[in-house]
Image (cartoon, rainbow, N blue to C red; front, side, top):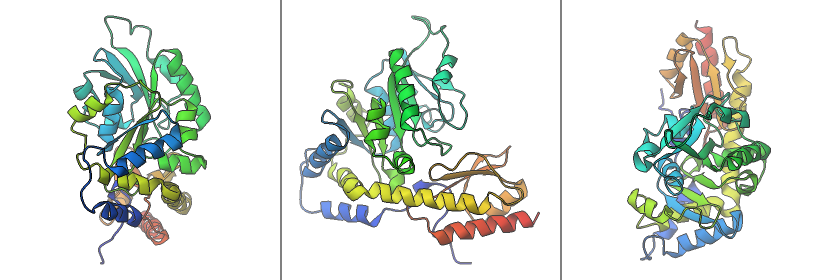
Amino acid sequence: MTERLRHFASDNEAGIHPQILAAIVAANSGHAPSYGADPWTQKLLARFAELFGADTQAYPVFNGTAANVLSVAGVIEPHQAVVCAATSHINHDECGAVERFTGCRVLTLQVAAGKIEPTSLQQIGAGHGPPHQSQPRVLSITQASELGTVYTPEEVRLLADAAHDRGWLLHMDGARLANAAAALDLPLRAVTRDAGVDLLSFGGTKCGLLAGEVVLVFTEGLAPRMPYARKQGLQLASKMRFLSAQFLALLDDDLWRHMAQHANAMAQRLHDAIRGLPGVEICYPPQSNAVFARLPAAAIERLRSQWRMAMWDAAAGEVRMMAAWDTTADDVDDLAAAIHTALLAD
């Protein structure tokens, strides 16, 4: 059997988009000032100001965990806390990085379908009073959520208002922001700053980059410690031009949107192909580039001998299948046929 070139375990597995790779090669010419003084980074800062507002501050970093940690580190004190969904990356997939590098606590909310609602905040009880309990400071939401669901701008605004009324800030983990904005057919600003977001982890790695995310701060003076937190957090790239060149290409002619629309469409194609199969239970609406499904254990075992996919909840037989910018219709059809065959074998 020919080795498969593409799988569905994660959009992190996808390669670099050719236009992104070409941008890296183009930046690799001659010498340039280091630590962000290069022309690519300066142009990127100006581009973010155009997209999100003149007072936007941008801090390129290497990866998503760093973007989330630094977003928090720039605005929080050790006696304070981040509030997030229990399913969030900050809580579930970052090995306590926020707690280690900021000294603060992470307080989790139990939510449905990966999305926080204003009523969810009632889980943070009035008992969190000074000086005995950590004081909430940042509400963090994920767009698109870890379960593939998407917040509308109206839903984000309600959370922003609820957070601000409590004296909190709203952070958005936008590792898959491109997929969410593409699904909503809206500009990036409409689902972030204009909806009340204060701090954004803008994702690139899952959208065709070699490596790179950007911390965006939307209020001047909000995060005065951010440059120092980035340096102490090992995230100040000396050759920053190569991070910035990638994002310039990603933003050029809305390349991010084209990639995200394609990935979303491939996820929808997979959903449509398997949703009616006996033994398949779709767990959440496919609003971005993820399909979550419950399958019989024997079928999962057969599938995973040929296909990489994430086992999301082994006890429930729930798997996650992620489409990426380079997923093809043939890939989707092959996986759907394999699922059908695995189910028939029971």
